[in-house]
Length: 142
Picture 1 (tube, helix red, strand yellow):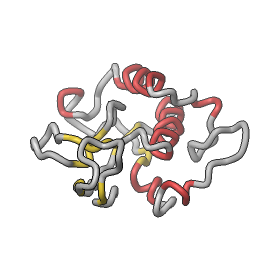
Picture 2: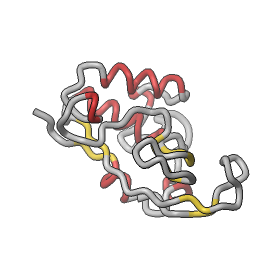
Picture 3: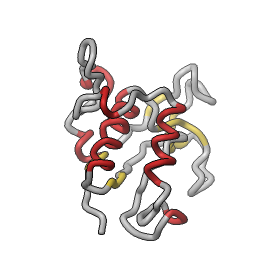
Picture 4: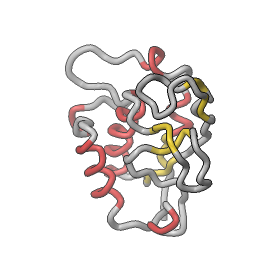
């Protein structure tokens, strides 16, 4: 859950509140899914997963919305419904993460922090570090 809060100077409407967002994303419980999970955790910890703007789903403004990094929000329905099956998802999402400057999975720890250098303290960025497991957890997809 991303709380509602005041937009910062780098948002479209500084000083105005944006809505909260409760979101869940799904990944298959296989090696590709586990590798992608590390990269998605890194993107979340570095503020790359969400942005403030106009919701594509509702048209509402000042909304906490997904950024340009692809996420699967449904287990079913295929690509057109943001679900599985989607044969292009891993390639597309990894490409999105590459463009955002997210390190490769082999250079990240399980928690999404860099394996070289000091570990990032998620409590500095995320109000509840334990919420990462509820937000981006792996689920088996048939």
